[in-house]
Length: 83
Image (cartoon, rainbow, N blue to C red; front, side):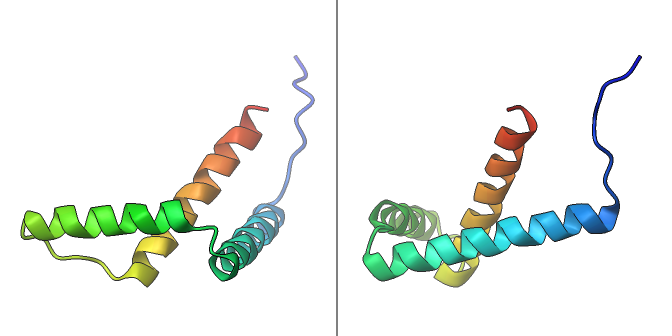
């Protein structure tokens, strides 16, 4: 049975992943400059207030936004896998 699935080396996959990560970074920077991350920033403020109310340690915004980017890349990868 042939599935007609293209095979790629690990290096090829990593190179493609690097391209996607660079595009996400570029888009986040553009959104930050244009003020279009209001909902994301609002989510961070909500997280910060809730964590503080529970007495939890609050992660820095830079670390939080990096996690946001990671989740975005994972969601994009999943969407591409099933499209």
